[in-house]
Amino acid sequence: MIIAIASDHGGFALKNTVKDHLMERGMKIVDLGTYSDASVDYPVYGRACGEAVASGEADLGVVVCGTGIGISIAANKVKGVRCGLCTSVEMARLTKQHNNANVLALGGRTTTPDLAVEIVDAWLDTEFEGGRHQRRVDMLDEM
Image (tube, rainbow, N blue to C red; front, side):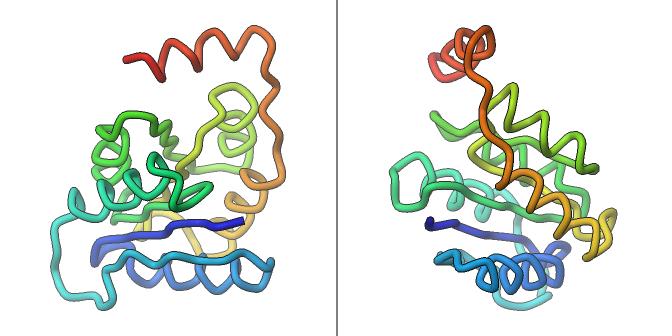
């Protein structure tokens, strides 16, 4: 599986933690930046990750900014992206089960590294339930 990952400066450290964990799990990573904690604009990185997923360059994506809010908004501007900001393991499970989220957003300043790894694992290891949720996902994808 190929996972695109991107962050701004506020998510840089957590992005690297998540990236290392994903590589330990055997995932191929496309790191779209940023590559330091120097100030950058999160929309650039949210869009880049969203485009990588929407184009098929990556199967899934992870985006990280200070809170996860701004970069999730940016990723969701890309047609075909369903990005969920998750602050708990339960949210990670539900965003995959019910929304088939193809991009996960995390907050670098609001989520501990240990919790972030748990969230990522729950999201990756959960299957989309389909059924009644498929109609809603289709509606999102048509927007």
